[in-house]
Amino acid sequence: MRDRTSNGGPQPVAEKRDEKTSTDIFKALLETSKKQRRAKREQMLKAVGVQEFFEEGGIKIDMKTCKGVECEFCIKVCPTKALYWKAGEIAIIDDLCVYCTSCVLNCMVDGCIEVHRKRNNGTVERFKTPAEVCALSQNTNTEKRIDAAKKLLPGQEAYLQRYREPHFTTDEGTE
Image (cartoon, rainbow, N blue to C red; front, side):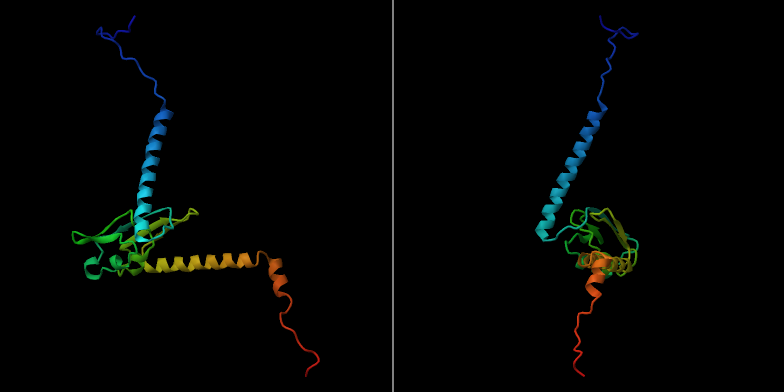
């Protein structure tokens, strides 16, 4: 016997939906989309001969302060040609940008271009001025120098052992 509604028609049967399955489908679609975008990006970067160093990032240009018509510096220094002219303003091909900050470093207007990026170790960096780019460069180089020193001299004892005794010899018999 069928269930009937008050008007005599068949009552809709409620279907049980497995929410975990539907969530997994959306996750799978999202992951597939990311993988396809990543593959396209790798192909485009390979074509221009540029290696990617950052997991993710972004770039935006404040068109209110941009002097692009007068200078074009950011377009000229972009290694991947991600910046270009479009209808009288600078446009960005997001898939080509490798977040190298060359545009920020060469921009004549502080705060006009903002680049943010995420390193493989999870560190997120933001740049709006050439001074910020230079400061990061100095910090990164310092970290590399410290890492190199640690590889050479892993601990205090190794340092003392290496430099405790003099490396020169004296001739006591000569005066």
